[in-house]
Image (tube, rainbow, N blue to C red; front, side, top):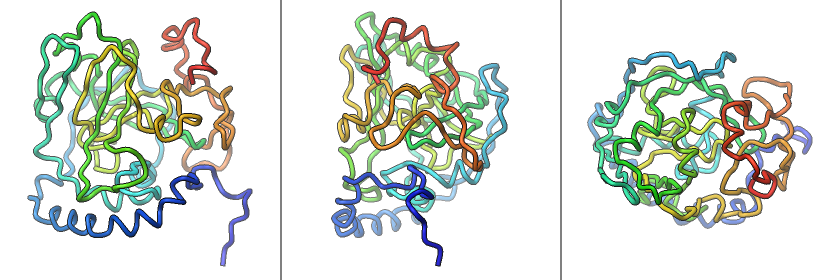
Length: 311
């Protein structure tokens, strides 16, 4: 039998202590709901589950680095609504119905709207962007996302001059999703200038096809210079506000997860160093780049800020 020694265990394989302590309670409380969700899923038409090809154009914003393996990108995920093990989302996310699906854009906007997901696909031409995405647990991927700039959607609703932040609220269905771990629904946020940056993407696909559930179908955020947990999955509400929104992981563990969550190798996670990372599929470690390698494009957003204080 293979026994892992502590030195062999990656930080990404370590369950946070608070989750470990609550897992037994979760198992006893959630089994019935998961079974009920599975029954609902099997009643859905096949068209609600099918993966389809997307017509895309290449993007000048893409990196030229080699792509990560597709099986790793779609099979090794953080999507705690469907389980805390990295393989759980791929096993469970198919229970989520992707149609009908609407996204409400509201708050400090001149023209609040509720978009049908298929209507959203017509907001801007889809493009393929190959982005580095870095997880907080010191591993990274290079992923070919398909989507359109968040700015294109926000333009449709005309943000007010008083709006300073954008809050993202994700889908939560307690019949098929975990009822414990953090305060659901999952919420995230950006400053408005971050949200309007050309690199900030609303993704609807990956590897040229519509997103699978475990990767945040049917609509997710991708912010490549921040840690992966900032990229909220399965979005149902986008809200503009003048106050910094509370974010899910910051509420859960404020000493570990700040609002900005920019990739910064000089800020150590309380339980491991962020100075190096391991690319999925590789054995060697590599130095972590400031802003995940996007410093030239985004560093001006944080001019004059103490990035160790505003982590």
